Amino acid sequence: MENANKIQLNEILKELENIHYPCGPNYIKNHKAQAILRMKDNELEAIYNLVESHAPSLRFTAIFRYEKALEGEPKSNTLPLNKNHLNFNCNNVSINDRIQVMLKQLKEMPKEWTIVQLTSQFNAKENLEVNADKFCTNPLHVTVFNCNQHQTLPYTITVDIPKDKISGYNIEIRQEMHSIINENLNRFLEIKKKSGKFVSHAVKQAYCKSRYLLNNRLENVVEQIQNKWLGVWRCLLLGRLCNSEIENSIASVIEETLKYEDCQNKTDKIKNLLKCFVNGSNHLSIDEMKIGLRYIFPQDNCKELRVTLGKMIQNLSKEYNLSQEMRHPLILIVDEKLDFIPWEMIDVLQNHPVSRMPSLHFAYALFKEYEDSIVNGWKINTNPKNGSYIINPGLDLKEMEVRLCSFFKYWLPKWSGLIGVTPSETEFRDMLSSSDVFVYSGHGNGTQFLAGEKIQKLKVNAVVFLFGCGSVQLQLLGPQVETYSSYHMYLIACSPCVVGSLWAITDVDTDTVTAELLSQWIPSDVSTHWKLVDDKKWKTDGTVDFNNKKMTLKESDKHEPELLRALCKAKKSAKQYLIQAAFVARGLPVKIQN
Image (cartoon, one colour):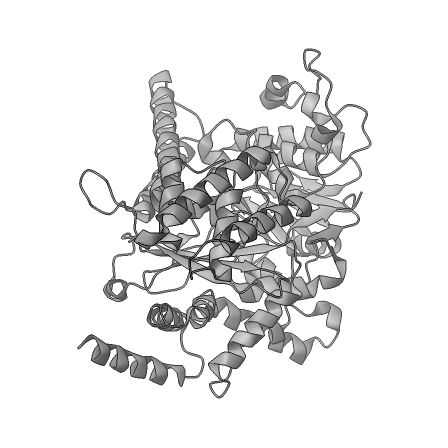
């Protein structure tokens, strides 16, 4: 009976493939369902279907924008992302040929990149869901793509829904995250109604207590994701070591250990998983390591092998202090159902350069757009002094305006910008089009001053910082509709990287992160580094004065040319966990040329 149902389902899915330009949600569900059917028999085909399930409507939008640009804007320097890297395959192209195209693209991308795709498993019950406030947590497909590795195929692991040990019920991660984000927003709206002022000390105390509880809840969610959901498999999210000698040495030891073991299961996938266990050994518990080893060698006659491999991992962990080793960037492709989760806050990623992408197609398209200026996996920014900013365009964040005005005047005096002025569409557009770095500090993402539809028609070469509430958040329009984000417009316009927040954020902490990030990443000609400023005075009234009690800085603390590493450091300057977790980067890894 099960085989008959499987055959019938395959026939239905094959029929659906014949629909030209299906709507995005149907396309997603179709390919997620196909992935489940193919996973046991053909992992590579299942992976192809998982890749196809990411951001199809956004691909349609980008393709349409490119075709419209060709019709009216023949000059190549005004074209958005090239549709040839995003196009959907015709039905007469065999599945094997489609897979080969995917593998060819992976081989073209920088060898320094590790791409990890997080896909929420297909859940048929969600097809009937009409409640926009209900969020199910489904099993998770974690797929690893090692770029530019000719002998290494992508592989995937499916992680079950986390369970509560006492009740046995599912831990609804997505529902709790949605609740935290909503309550956080409601607290902001309550304060906004009162013109940002507390009517009494008791009201202020109640607000502070609610923030404290939200911070604790968010930390608890991250801990559940880390320990109860991902568990041992969070080691798959680690990028390659910058020290290739250590990486090669680990691979050699694994190869040598398996060479003399009488066990048939010695596939490349198994070897890659063992490398991941070694790389993540500083973060994994003994129990988690046992679970991982039992997964890849479940047979009873492999018990001695599991013990041998466990000792090997312990020895390599002692020999190389891998938690202190620098790593190349991780490109994290996140299912839209999972995008509001702060994955970057789990232990293996807290100090790791990470950038998000909506799909493998967009990672490849953006790579091809800037291929000539990508060196060792980093898109090089050669002129960070060509920057511009818009501060407090809504005219109602005066304290933020004072703080950031003093920062920009001190650290980046040669930048141009608007402070406490509402920009015209032309001014906003010109700054985006002509700058190498663009900073927006105000409410939201700035689309109230320049609509997203107009942004996507531009050619944006700037690295964009959007320091507003929910500035790169994916907007949920309904349970059966794909999400939307202003970031998508910047992506179509070819912006190499956009930094912003996933939810509502407080101004003082955000200003601190803004100044910390920009002063870490962008060098200045001033004699005294911003890190030595008296924080209390600056936060109070914008005074730039230097604290004599602060020690002199190491050279490594003065400048971090890699944007993603600078972001990791800058986030920690925020006092509240909610603010630290909110900031993410989307796009390519970017580096300032020394």
